[in-house]
Length: 216
Image 1 (cartoon, one colour):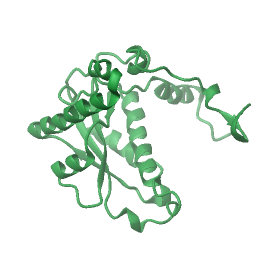
Image 2 (cartoon, one colour):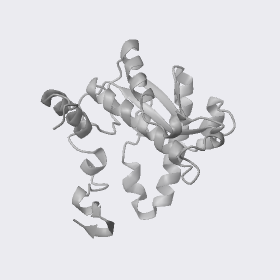
Image 3 (cartoon, one colour):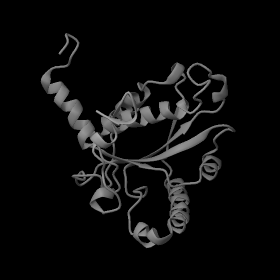
Image 4 (cartoon, one colour):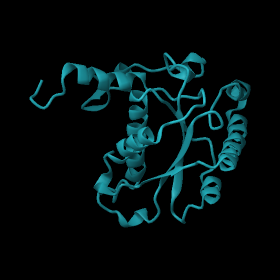
């Protein structure tokens, strides 16, 4: 323990938010009060970014017909994904993959345009812009859990189609449709585990020492 550590209660709260964060698909309507939404977006904006490029852009979807158009794009990709899954197609189609029409708020998280000019930290790893945006989304997710709100990351869409729908400039790219709002309860485990779609692997299987594949 160092002098810079949080108190025990504060540390417990941080770890609890991490442990109880879930990719939510079931929402109960309601609303997110403006001050709360502002706090969540400020938390996202405080994320680390390579070269301090801050590549994130958030679009709040307040227009209901537009929300419906986004949901339609997701549905179209859901069908295409099912076709690509082959023998697991029927199983996949039974999963609830989004809550766009049920949640209180919909945000689209996108990478900004003109990212090529940011070289610091990206010369050999240009995808660090995506990593930076992902950190912002994670900040938003954890803050939402602390506020008692659920959030779901929807990635089932054709980026070009969504970019055109929302008027993104050339070079910008949508990465996530984020569903946010009150939920009846948080899943006790990831939904895909509860539905039998996948299993969680323990850290021990993913942790190596010094060289790839060498366990501690």
